[in-house]
Length: 106
View 1: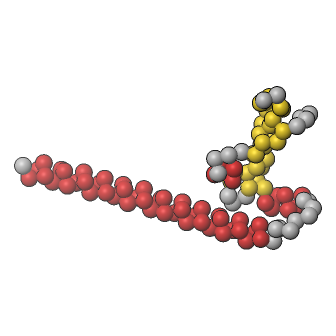
View 2: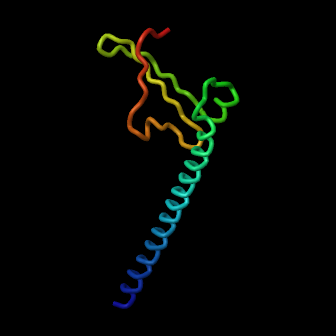
């Protein structure tokens, strides 16, 4: 009887240690996301009145741009363009939407 109780307590202890480890990883991830957002906010503040986009600014703010294949929707040619910003990623995906550009597509 005591042996089963000890085994049960040991399993519970191991499970709780794993839970603590998982929670610590989540906290680190959340802190990193907050740091990234703060870095992005500091960067973007300098460029709120941007009139010309030069290569230096582009490289500073944008990680990558994904241009998807053309689709025809309601008779219009549409192409998804996804911009992944440095530090914050794809902001459209975070908002559960994507930018649609319609019109003539080469």
